[in-house]
Length: 517
Image 1 (cartoon, helix red, strand yellow):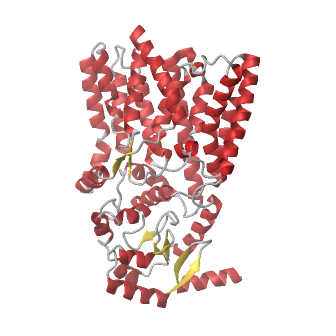
Image 2 (cartoon, rainbow, N blue to C red):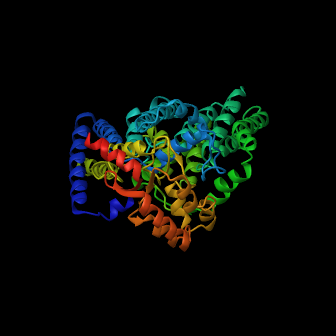
Image 3 (cartoon, rainbow, N blue to C red):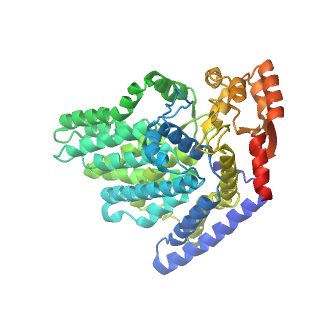
């Protein structure tokens, strides 16, 4: 996003930016003259339309198919870390497994997944707005709240199935209960502790957020604050019990702690990709809230300030090869709550010229809007409909059979012939011997020749997969040659939409006969 501001990749992007800046500036000039206020309605509507267009266009992400497939594997009695590689907490798959078990194998699972994520996103929107109203009262403006959130609904990738959505749901709920911890009642501490603990159990990306009630209670020291701290900490520990019970029951606690904490710790990098316009609005709003806290010793102002600081620090880190704006998903929500009632429209109030002030707002809105337009117009990866069609064809090949297909094009409802199925696993294998060793726990050549999976990935990111596995030392020289001869004898190289796959001869013949009919 910063690159788009300072280093336009194409002349058309620059023209689009200038055009929207001028058009937005004209709109603000008109609204200033007519109502003497900022009218954000067109930008809310445009971003909402772009969000739904992106939903229907953008291709299936590896995380979408990965979490669905992991949930299906657990529904089939498999255990993460032991039966398949992962470096995420299994709580999202445990939550989804009962639902996945009821579904018939179909590519419609991706439609249901995105509808489900839309539902959670909508609930998160509602909770965030309750936080805004509770913090700012009548000053909270729904137009500003929706303007910030919808500007980043695409970049936050809120419709792709990830544990982050569940994390945001529980953290937003936890902040809501923290706002109530200054009273005489102790139950907000209990519910807040359960919320923060469950959020952390889904994913520890925002690992500092559970400290929010502790810091606020120690700084403010409201009535019964020691008892409240004890109740909060106890409820956080209790919230971990479902996950801990599952890990201990399946004897994978050590594997969980290694892959989710120790291994991921080695991937963390400083990754400052915060959007400049939102930083401007957020810092302004934080200063307004800080003055309010100092003047009135306002407990609610302190809660939101500490939440913003903790979330901002967390958002400065990511993992190797950061995959997108979803790392900032929680930060966007906190910023939207922060900005909604701070009077951010006064930022350019000192600019006396109405035209210059209108142009400044036009440039800001263009900076926020242009990335959404370009992302929707040149959506990443493949097309959603093409992906569903291709995965549907692979599902026809692999139904009631095994496969060795690397995400995101994976039929979800099929068993893997080897431990290799995750694109992240394969990418990380190049730099981490421990990941290569995990892949080799099931000898790829041996298991492919024994199980004869219905479909096998032929390419991976424009690389011939077998040769690439040989170069990564996942396959030995003799394994490569024997596997190559086996595949040439028993498989047909076939195009599924655009990518190439090894399709077992009997499956390829059946497909050709079906096409002829």
